[in-house]
Image (cartoon, rainbow, N blue to C red; front, side):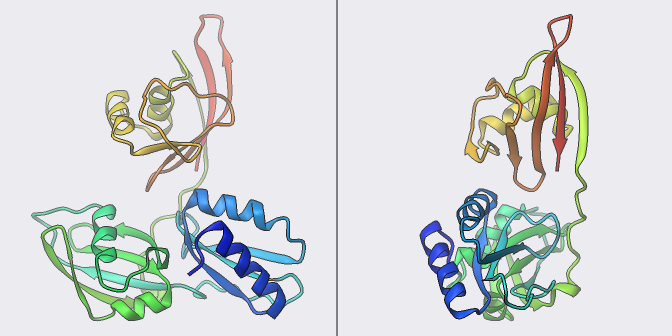
Length: 249
């Protein structure tokens, strides 16, 4: 399943030759942006992305000839998975559920989209239809818990709430990553610094572990599961602080 730049370009060429719409595998944000930049050079190609819900982090690209009939529908190229188990005494994260699914035989990582936790009852996920069918009725293990997997149409999933972009203004002592991410994501600065040190955040899609890293306008901070923060503007105040404008999406 196409998930790197070279194979995606080959898939695009195939879509143009055959006039048949073709899907890539699921791509993370960085992969998707890089692929879309490369594919934009193909004037006859129409590119759409869809991950099952508006705020999806992992998405598939639909590649088709500009003059072919529109193909993308909300259920096209995607299936749902219910992951059921009792996590009351052993809470699991979305990353734990993803690891459990990827440990199943025959699972291609590029066939798995977003995964989100549903309290102590388990989780739900978006996948390629072929993967959903493969895992339907199987058992897996997430942390210490045995789970049951069931394929579900997208319409039966309780999809994550849509995150609307918010513009935030504040005055900060510095442009340090921990200071701005703390203000933008609404978390204490000490807690945010700890998350940065353990590698939970990325800066312009690149790994970052230094809370003191300084940002500049245009920089984007990604936090998986919590969205993205963009520094739009920063200007000095008379008291040598920074008045910043950020957008959280």
